[in-house]
Image 1 (cartoon, rainbow, N blue to C red):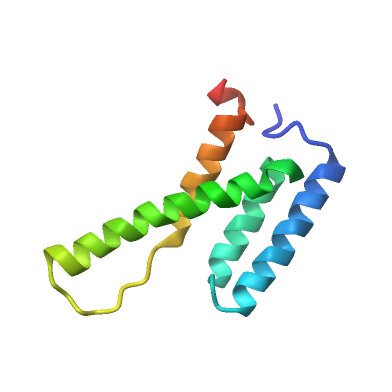
Image 2 (tube, rainbow, N blue to C red; image 1 turned 120 degrees about the vertical axis):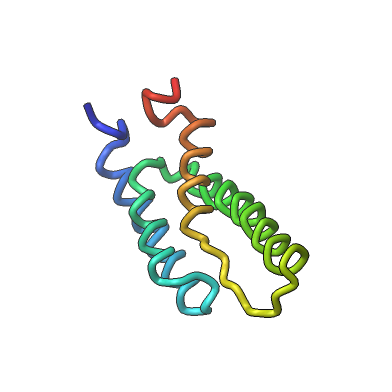
Length: 109
């Protein structure tokens, strides 16, 4: 059983798109290198037409994680220490939401 039913052509296009976007995000210091590698690792699961949806779901999950970090460190504990957002969690949840809504895996169907 394969995890994806995409053709090799679709997989290579998806990986090329995410490599280019990951390089741009890393170059402008919007995303860490590990997060870019994680995004590239998830890219073979999606056909090129839903890569944008993967990024939208990831951004939405990142907003939720950022809200939790803000509430935890600013409102509850009143810490003024700069905390980074663990964006790997948002990337994984964004991938799962994309697979859930597009039924990319048999476990979601």
